[in-house]
Image (cartoon, rainbow, N blue to C red; front, side, top):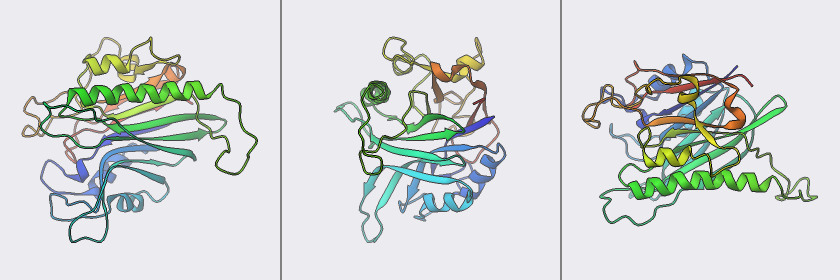
Length: 283
């Protein structure tokens, strides 16, 4: 059984106002996941507690048996600091990571958006025995519907691109940059999407006409006719005055639909303003 967890960890900032990656790690380890997908991971960026730690390296140290990769949505110089500040997404895996792609997401102009920041998704190919699949984790724009919509569409574009690449003839180079990479159609997309269930962006992600191997909401498959469990705003009612609601999802392609066994939300953790979401697949 393959276990994958996705969590917007808010730089480890808990409901108590304390930044603790150790608390994040303890919560994750309860599920013994094979793959961990994290959003809002900072490297040398100013944090609410005044620190500016390399959270990527700290999380790697907290999960020593995992291979770790990082995708920076923001990469910027910081005044009076030698290290560059980075902010983005992270994937850790106990299974072999065969390839990594970092995808910046579009930011079309939106005059009505008061705030926005660069967004990114990181894609890896994982191998389980003789089977391979891709997993993408992302964190979409909150303040701009226009940008969030474009980012949702771009994720589908990336999937369509992979479908097209399957028909290309492989070059003969076996070692260099032209070496063929494993990048199968089978795909899982997870993260903080910052949209609501049945919103236009949600409908885009699950549109059956745009892909040969379309995406499905894993919650709907595993829990038909059941309202999505809240993934945000359960404990933090300052950032989330609308209180508990769902904005974190797993989307899986048709080709993986029959492998899905379970999806669950940890609704007791207060280590972040979001809740960790876990799926299990029989691969």
